[in-house]
Image (cartoon, rainbow over all chains, first blue to last red):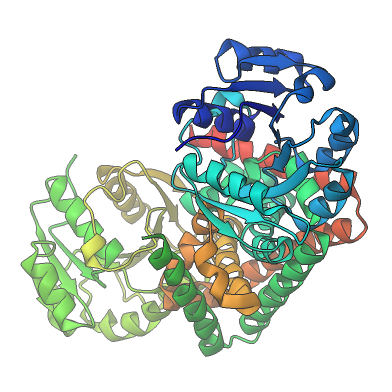
Length: 288
Length: 288
């Protein structure tokens, strides 16, 4: 399985960008991988570790001859970066991203693409609560799903190339609209992250001295509260409407349970918990 | 390390009761272990698997000569069971439990103890989202903490025996009042369980077809929603005031984040997430 690109430039070489580069190399990519990053010492280290072949601290040089540009910074930086690099993207190149929010991002990026350059949004469902190149792995995407979100403006050929690329990296690709992606991931990913942060803050507000008493339940439930705050701040902002809709639905669910406890409605409470257990079993079944 | 009891009767031989019996045997307990259970086929299987030495489907016979009686059913059944067995408990015996709620339970059970019988509450911090004797393990308590909650009525000698017992089973014992136990565990255990159930129900209410899309974040966060609904219904009921207090604090935390997203207050949102990450790191540190 060949990869259709000769030179790939990754902007933002952290956990995801670094793993993307390592996966390319592991799958036999023979072209050049350029890394661009804000923090020079980080990107120098990425070259030293052999994750990328060369680096640029500035944008122009690293962009000019790239066939594929991958935006791999926190989503809040995509627009500003694209505004800087757009004049240097060569005709025929493809720009993609790995962000967790799609509709608002694509609405901002598509109009910035120069003539002959196409944008295809991707969201590989892989990650860790740890960030940075030290956690990058050539197997991070292996066996994961990757959501690809074309719009009516996406060129068919570019879409095919991006689908093929993620397949080569070991992903199962799923195509959906940016809007469909966003409401689904608001519910199953963005909401859980907000809840994990809120739960830890609740324990702190009640009495932070009890944090070390935590057992496995609280630990597992809040593992994702170790994720980078800037990343999730941006995701909440860019997917505002869907995240708020999920939060409202969750708040109703919490208030319903609160009402059942207040009224000592044991049957109602048990029914609520049974419904959840049955739903959770569906996840278990899907994963096995 | 000798165990001070000759005959131990476990009422409710499931994950915890079964693991308690297996742990006793593994640590060289030479006395007799009797199991009492509601469902005959379950308790017959517990004898067949060598988890307990004998069983009784009724109460009187299994209670009469026990030196230690362990209540290991869902907490909602403790009071009813104690009302039935109290006339058969021998003088000098100790009754303990393994329930996740202490104050309300002890308030109901202490007055039911006959002359010369003392109650000492325990809460081993161990468990799985799976229930039943098939998941019982002789190492379930090994390295866990066990909270012991004496009251002004608890006899010192009985307290010492119970502390010693859990130490022999490999637990680190921690003594606190039932009230202190309850508000701490409302925050770090009961609240997380309620949230896990509510989160799954939210996804179902939004669109249950998306459940199979769940990634590791949602899976890990809701693992405990596989726990038995009856158990957590009882815990919420018996620890009502503390659970409601935690739920109120959590609802405030959720509404605060919701307000920050609505107002696109990115700095405020980042601050909120940073506070949580710092708190979560304290848990990581305590566990390592």
